[in-house]
Image 1 (cartoon, rainbow, N blue to C red):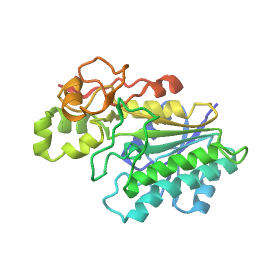
Image 2: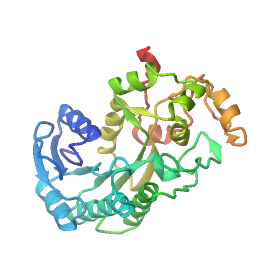
Image 3: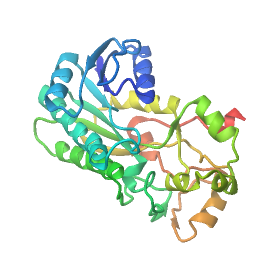
Length: 298
């Protein structure tokens, strides 16, 4: 049974929410972060440079954790050189997995991203073979951020093949844009969410490259909590998404107007604003289903 969870990047917006949820569920929590010391959201704080293998090993050991949630990566690529962006995603994940494996920590959750598929921050339109996308869809990233996310998943595959010196259970969560009520109200409810409105606002390319996906913080932290109690063997990639799109246009119209040459799977949901991302694997592995829709704020 998991009693102590170390969360890297616990100073961040998602990290704080994860720590608060885990604490509310009765876990002992340890925040492993490099930034300003913040002891308000966890039981313990360990200053840790996640790109320093020795510091990661020392902090994971000192935390006495049963599980590690690795969120301590750059959230966006704009502020750093490409090699630093890639390093943040790929090398920090290697250090966390190596330390966890050597120290006998059996469960690790990694923050992957929608960018792993070749969407998000890519300058060109996303490559889509079929909809809704699932974990079998090919990955075509070209930016340091996306390649770093793809690499962390490949690194996790490698650790999962080891007979010893590796966590038993590794989950890579492919996060979309994570919103809270305030962000959702400003971005979705109070804005023009038609395709024409999004084109005028300048957000169309990025949001199309995310397949108009998002997830609410409440669903995200619930899924993270479930992953730290998981006990499958190996590494699993898992898509994360709200059950609906972030756009006002019905999904069948989206498919016709923007993805007319893309194969639509037979099991595509029939709801008006069905998500273009399939989260059924998260349901199968963790008994998790997203419930929060931005439309409930209207």
